[in-house]
Image (tube, rainbow, N blue to C red):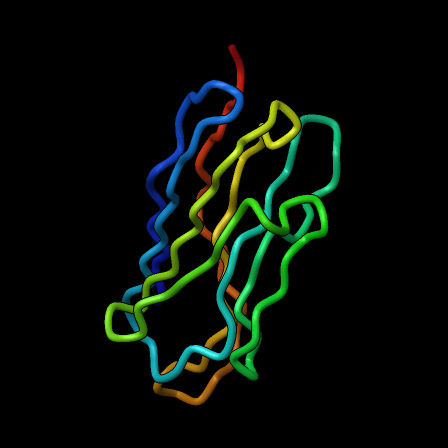
Length: 120
């Protein structure tokens, strides 16, 4: 079993910053990809930023230049630094990972989500 624990969400004013964290633990042999998606009310879940299995990063066009994804491989943790936040960034942010466990099963996992609200 694998657990993803997210933290760092909250309420922030437009132009402010937040840093999200997601730590993976449990039956982890190797992590191939890890990153963040978000879902706003009435909208589909969308990619925000991820590390791909090749080690590169992908960002949604809407967050490029404002958000930065980083990771600590030793801690199986990924971070999302969000600057210059806008009201349209308001959403539930989900951490996700694609990994292989010690039984050599490759699976996607999702966190429970953390609310980010940008409002004055």
